[in-house]
Amino acid sequence: MAVIALVAIVHALLLFSLVRAPIPALPDPRETPPVEAVLLPPPKPPAPPAPPRPAPKPAPKTQTPVPAPEPAREPAAPALATAESGDTSASTGAGGTGTGTASPSAQPAPAETPAPPTPPGPRYMAPPSVTLRYASFVNGVQNPDGIIRWEQDGKHYRLAVETRVLWFRFAFQSSGDMTDRGLAPTRYEEARRSKVEVARFDRAANTVVFETRGGQVPMPTAFQDRFSIFLQLVGWARGDPQRYATPGVVESFNVADTREVEPMQVQYVGEEDIDIGTDVVRARHFVRLARHPNDKRRVEIWLAPSLNWMPARLRQTEPDGTQIDLVYRSSEGR
Image (cartoon, rainbow, N blue to C red):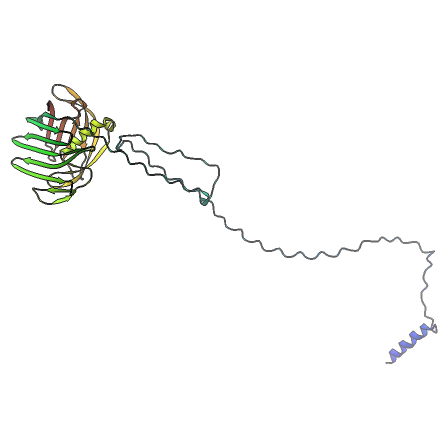
């Protein structure tokens, strides 16, 4: 407290000039050299700290555009015609080109390919009635002549084939109706030695009836019997020769005998010259294809345009290698 009181007294004396304190005199401004002062602009306030940069977001994964699948190519056209019209030509569509890559979703939807029109049925032209005589050979050894009798009146037909192998007689008969598409057999008969078997084809009931063996089965489409099939080919060749202009054409049938019905295919394999004894004729060669893997029986027929497309030769090769040949010799018109 004493110190504080002492300090207060000193300040009061100084105030009332009672105490002279040595105060340094101020210099005379006239004697003091002027001092140049350079005013500096006030410093700029510090910039506020930059806001923290947000962490970069991971770039979205981009899927590599998958090229649109190429449209399925039309299958290559077959080398040989099997169409009803016999046409062997084929055409393919032109492909397009592009300069950019588009995602699959951007590709236009492929246009739907219309179904090809159903080819027209083959034209059938029946040959005129005729009796044909054939030289018969078994393994090259000549036997009694064989005969083919063909009769038709435009609405109905009858086909009879008779031949002898050694001293055995074989006879086959097919009869039925004629339509715009060809033959429609209604009865088939086989006579082997002294045994006769018959099959009847009921088109109203659409059934094949095995009269001798017993039983029946539904009648399939493209139906023929074992011998009417050959005259069916004759009528097709007469009606449309260009149908068999190129080897490889295959005709499909369902064929009945007196015991069963089975699918059968006949293929045109090309042209050949057939020696008929008095002349050489050009004929078109057809072969029955194997019906199953173990089918060793081979049936062939040669149709000659110069004989009204009737057979110039027929040959059957048995599984044991036996060959039965019928070669045209003469004909009698009816």
